[in-house]
Length: 88
Image (cartoon, rainbow, N blue to C red; front, side):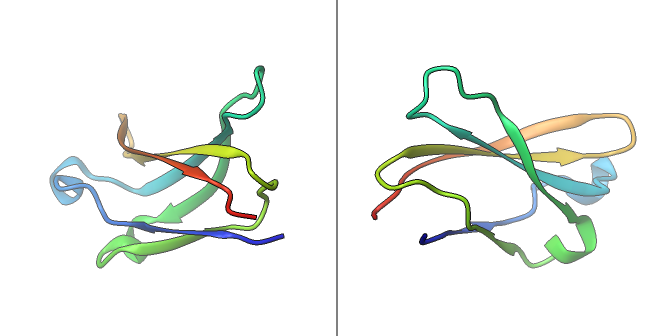
């Protein structure tokens, strides 16, 4: 299996909104009934200059969508969505 490496930068208002961590969600768009899955939690302190998330669970020629969600004590905000096709 190969893997995806996604560069994730912090949200622009992370400090002001009190972001505690970021979640990476993945959905296999090649499957009709695929659900979104929470695949990673990244502490906010690791995101100060960005972070590279590596996904090792891909299938050949499948299309994946990734969502990045910024989480604070009171809110969850999706701020990025990426679609990638496996190149294997």
